[in-house]
Image 1 (cartoon, one colour):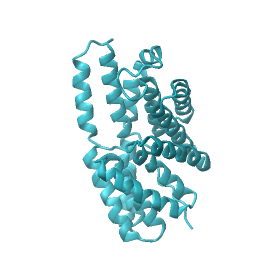
Image 2: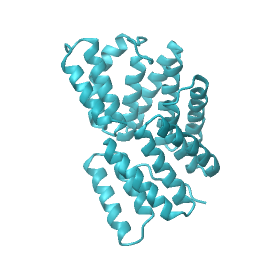
Image 3: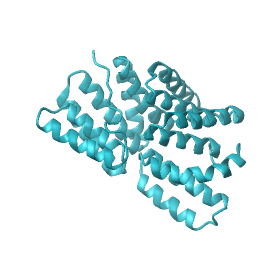
Length: 273
């Protein structure tokens, strides 16, 4: 969850390596990963698109890492393009990540690629298709004991379960993986899970508790530097408020999202009974 520190470290590593060296490309991938996670889709595309030729040339190479680097590059490009709302391009990169993962048959590659495919389906509003992919990610994560992947995937799975009205399942998944995110100090994903809890509480009418969780998610966003979580948490906080405070908070969320070239009201599209 220390995204700013990750960016600083990657930039220093890249500066110490020749431009065409694998170490330089790896540093750009690391920075692109952090920027993708923090919602900086412009920075992600600017960093990762020029590296694609290198990674595609070394299509199945891990270079000492757990996952195949080309899978990770295509996957994070897909993530950034989902935020940009360029779903056609996002789908192309997610599919390419999946195709390479199918070739390598490495468990982390396949889990990551399936998650990227699921995120594209969420962005397209195809909830059932997204759930099938995300639940497969969680199943495979349990099989190989991947405690970092499961909380990340749950940020999306809980949102999708709420969207289709499967409240009890969303609640159970939240409880399990919020604890895991806290245990493993995954502060960035923990912040998103706090937001999902706020969504669940707001949907079920517990507005005071929902406001507290939205405030916690907002604080996490500001601590981690998450450009997307911050306006999303504000938009959700507004749902728990009454006029005129609600209109004021919503205006701040909209202006913040617009200034960052993010979706005007990102992500908050809950199911209601």
